[in-house]
Length: 102
Image (cartoon, rainbow, N blue to C red; front, side, top):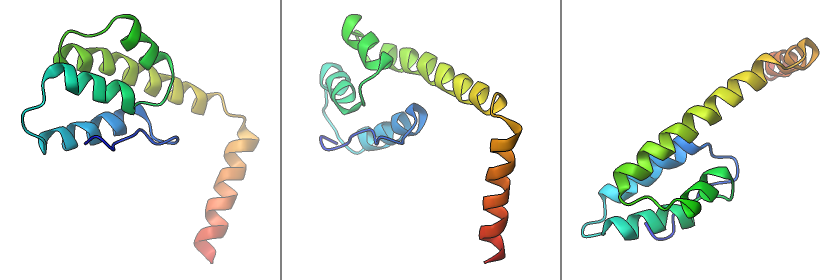
């Protein structure tokens, strides 16, 4: 649990799920330790800034805050996909097709 870190390419939802799976394996951790482990394991960004600025009082509050940032991250990703140019989307399709042919 102490070695868990958010990967550079890992979205927040995946990391929180992985963190929670590991947390279930460890008995006797206080809320404060769990919160600090989460903060230290996250890659730097707006979520970490918010947790440092307004430190959650328990793990449930941390998960409520995390859910808001997960939602925002997923909405931004969806928006980015919608605004991709048709050429970029077509290029991705061509690469996938050529991989399938091999």
